[in-house]
Image 1 (cartoon, rainbow, N blue to C red):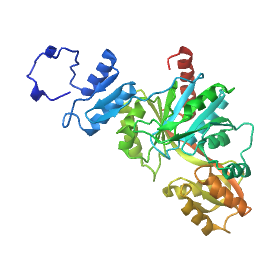
Image 2 (image 1 turned 90 degrees about the vertical axis):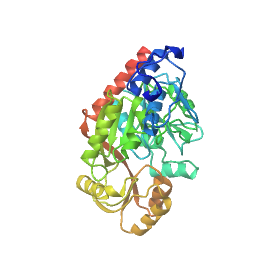
Image 3 (image 1 turned 120 degrees about the vertical axis):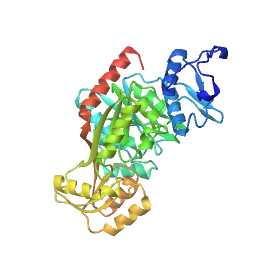
Image 4 (image 1 turned 30 degrees about the vertical axis):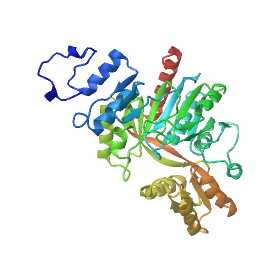
Length: 413
């Protein structure tokens, strides 16, 4: 790719003595080259101002999403390797960052699919996951506060995503560990491959491979769902290597599509830009609402959550109006143990019940403190509610799962 100032107008390029593509639009030219020549690697010999920083990462995303490596003078992006080990229809559920609601969407997807006659299981990976993949049969055991705290005392991270999935959807989960995450989304190290092999031996007939943060499970799946936080900077989603994640996906779940997290104009802009990058995508707009797993009517509730402080009044009002409780305090510091302990201490004696997400320090701090004070501890789900986009989230999840089954049957993964 280059400017015309170095080449005479209308000059034939056959003297180059290798195949070339002539296109006014470099993006179209790159896609043509990938299709026609099926290269193993794309070498970028361009420079500013012909290809700027934004354009270069966009072109890299296009190349990498085709399974081709992308290298230049002082950089090298290896095409991610997705291992073809799953012996069941599967969906990858990934995200464009941390705290965008992946686990909540995953648990919701499992409930929807179970009600539809599927038998799903989840392979989840996290930085606090077990050193050897761990199977939790959520439909057979009760994950009580005492049980989770006993796991915590054994040195386990009892609020890992696979515990949350198992508790919220009562399905079987396989917990895995990962460390690090590259720009494109590959973990530096993980035991997810072993987790996938374990999932192959389970009775369940459908697998959801759940990402961690912006990191993607290194497993080849039949379809991919990406969760995007509407509160995220637009360029995080549609620029950099957010572009890559959109290009490899088939369904986008936009979460937190409400003020004060994101106003209508921003949600519409994100929707428009997402479709511009990948016109084949379906996009759904959602918000999250708390759903306690036990009755909390008449209780004085102290809520601990990872949600933004901006959502305090919304959460308080929703819980009081829908669950007949009084919210006497909220801590948004569930992922900061020092500040969380401070918030709990300040509200001691004011609450009769602790309501918490199953994340971060919810077991080793919140649950332990609740049991010490002899207060009831209740865990809660964050349920996605459709507020716009291409239909209903539940219907689109079923549609995606059926498509994944068809792809698996045809062997097209």
